[in-house]
Amino acid sequence: MSLDAGLRALMEPVAGEASSAELLANPSGVNRLEAFCGAGLPYSPPGVHVMEAQAQGPNGIVPLRVYGPLRGEADDGGVPGLVWLHGGGFAGGDLEMREADQLARELVARTGGVVISVDYRLARDGVHFPVPHEDVLAAWFWAVERACGLGIDPGRLCLGGASAGANLACGAAMYLKDIGSPLPAKMLLAYPFLHSTVPPLTVPSAVMSSLPPFLRFSAEDCTAMLENYLGGPASLASSYAVPGHGDPTGLPPAAIVACEYDDLRPSAELYAQSLRGAGIDVAFRLERGATHGYLNHSAALDIVQRGLAFLASELASADGSND
Image (cartoon, rainbow, N blue to C red; front, side):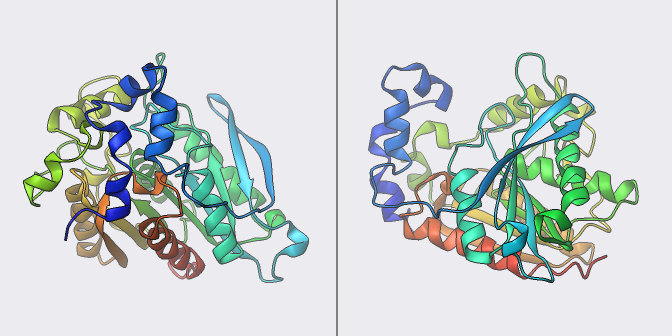
């Protein structure tokens, strides 16, 4: 299949850009990045109840943003919940990006559930693993303690994220398993980065070479991204930091979205294979025509709508039967 037409039509403003950091260093960079993400397309995100909150972790306050119904609006039996972690290569991203805010609003509107978006510390200015990992755990325990007050059925509380956020979600789930803590009902993972080395992607090279360079991930890029997060060599990484190399036995079911034209796609495929080999249920969606990070584009695009629909369906079906 060829690159999705809607995505392809948005790439001209960022053609040739080597990295998002270099793009944003340009005075026109923000506007060009927004054009690339589809800011000019006709779309209004769902209006849902939003409140700011904070979790206390070992490294200080972890800001949270809670999307969803007030308790009085929730069903008596509780609604599904999701602790969600945005992507950004461990060193970028925030709660305003579409992969965080738009996704949370859409999932709440589609499921009637609650999404808790986590503003974990980024790997820059001396911050390294395990600090972001510990922030995620602090957010998770905050959500577990307050689930009923938020109208969430504790048995339907899920954990997930996109790209580096998916790495953080899997690492946290492994830690919870190892300490014998109740696990998420399900892991929701979008185009995850889970391995220190990723096998080459086997798709038509003409399509990949047509992408803006900042949508590509070479082996050197992956190593640099991971070692910046670790603050040291990847060879010494904990499995909580590189969960694709850990033992998945006992982890909860997973729903995984991979992108057809994404150098990190093999990481998602390998992880799905590893989970299934351990007897864990996996719902796997290969988004045909998609590039890495496509959920950062406007939900005016049909391809984004399809990805959101898959994640919403998987969130709605979480039932805690793995406990």
